[in-house]
Length: 347
Image (cartoon, rainbow, N blue to C red):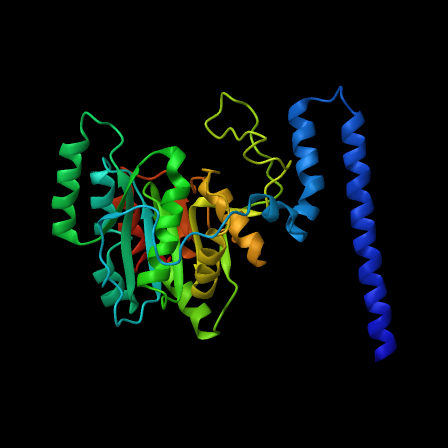
């Protein structure tokens, strides 16, 4: 038995050496291979670096910063619900990233996949849905829109808001708001999900899936549409542009599309801790999630029925296993009607 373990250990080390040698060889080739198209080189470099970035800590070390003061948020709450989860057994804490002006989207979600009462009565599960916002960024309508948000929250009691400007370049601040809120006010939730406000979630399928995972006590769980070996965008014309000063490496750690992903409660706690030690100036929130997860050794799992940024083709048969689909606003009610129609599951 000891001999077998020794031989197995030698084989593992040999394989790791081969991987490292191959990576160094490809990187050397890329350095001298100037005539190739820069876009191709970027992707080849990113996949070459992927093994190193996902296996070692030098990326996280370069992004580490001094830990913020424990328990003190960087931004103040303007709207909050501290007792949303208090003294309750919560299967899923569902955060919906939304813009202040997107009232119609929030209204549609409340009537469909974010409907807590439906999930409780029909699916026998307790979920908590919260819409996550910053402040209106347009100064001309800021005061009027903020008053409307306060009114909306008094009606539905499902908004959390901090006093940072709600914009694409503050998505990581919205990420930090979600995980700090979960850590402080709902640390006992079995699962945490973050989602965009233009997606569709097949809640019956998702709840059945999560309940099966809860029964086996799953941990270290992170699932969604996985991006592997993705290179930073260096084109200054792109809104996803990331400078070398902000992120110097040729590839990001593996991460899931920010449109929709799910993690277990233990991962949520670890990600929060990691987020307090990393530089949050990198504003692409799903990439920042990947950096946090990489720091704590959590690997994302690919799930074919999480569509990521893609839109699932509409067909009743797809609802048998579908989890999420991106790019739905006007057709949300129709999709929900089909998803909750018992006849669909029998066809």
